[in-house]
Image 1: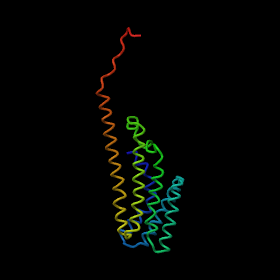
Image 2: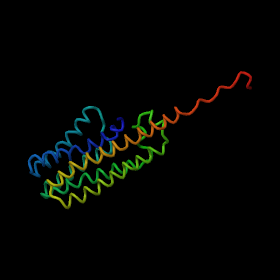
Image 3: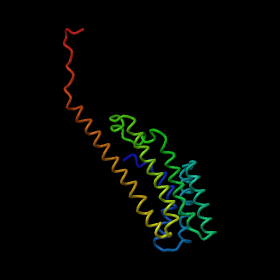
Length: 198
């Protein structure tokens, strides 16, 4: 679905965290995981730059967070700096999603023309609420779980929550559009005016 394009910057933003989680799960070692996550974030930015895509403010902020949180964790030996980074990213994305109607540009024309604008505003706010909830949950987990348990929890919650909301929205919108089409098809056609009608 076209809506997935909206989350490409988020996926790039979370690349360093994803790499950190994967390496941590594979090795159980915090330091190599931090180094791998930091390297992934830097490499992603360089590749984008080489492709002629100028990083936006969000990506620069993400890179700064990767560097600051990664170096802070390495210098202090405390992985919670890296573990807390997704909270800032989720909160920033949630704030961006509070703009009414941000979702409209990602919706197919057939659905956009069939439903009122308020529907997309509502779903945009629901997505923002999920991002804010994810930000809060990550912060709690980062300070209550070990790094490996946090990595497991994040690996499950991150994709599962977004996929669940994505498919819920898809099914509900598709059903609503279908019901509206059936309702319009069931209406009798307007009679054509007779030749003598002025």
